[in-house]
Length: 272
Image (cartoon, rainbow, N blue to C red; front, side):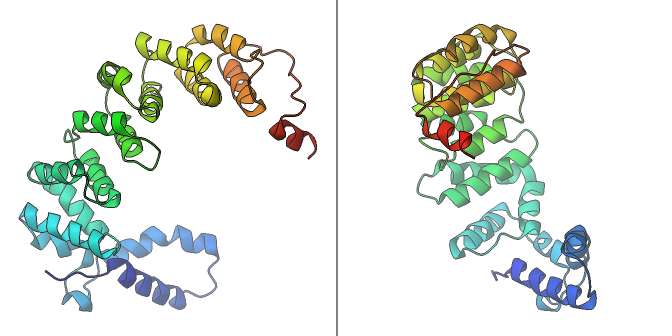
């Protein structure tokens, strides 16, 4: 099973193409990128014995072979060919168990797990919601797979909100933040709304974050707690600005801006 560096071959092609089209500005080259890529994908390639790069992986019909290729590219840290990604997604259901196994295995690299999760998200009705919710609830930072799982769940339907809120109390601190971020992209759910408001008032270091979520949510009831939050004496200037912005986004009037003498961010901006 031979591994080809598709990215390197395309860059060679692109350099030759640009040499044949001198005088193009950078923005013109960017506009021609898709044209170059399509031309390269659909042209017989000598390095593939005359096979078109866009069709090369069609020869693989067994999911285990495609998954082995995926793992090998990741292991060697070679750019994953778009035709291989597309082939796995197009194979659909037969590849799903293999991809789920990759995501579930914490010993795999985050890069491999994240790619497998993205593939599942691109397959119609194949995204394992329970697995995504597990990843979110266990995540400790934005470096984990929780953010990728959250992005995938934002593309589902609003029934996921109840599933997420059922797991909210047992989630990590970062997991709770991520859960509410996902919920803010769907119609208002009472449990999610109450959790956002509570977090706004109690999570001192993240008040600006929760103010932003309430602004995204669009529930005018949040004006009252936001107005209270902007008067808190331990609010820093940057979070204060986020709270004011949220009030304005919800149609409220935050009133005259407070002075934050001594706050580093306030002093830096005032002296610009």
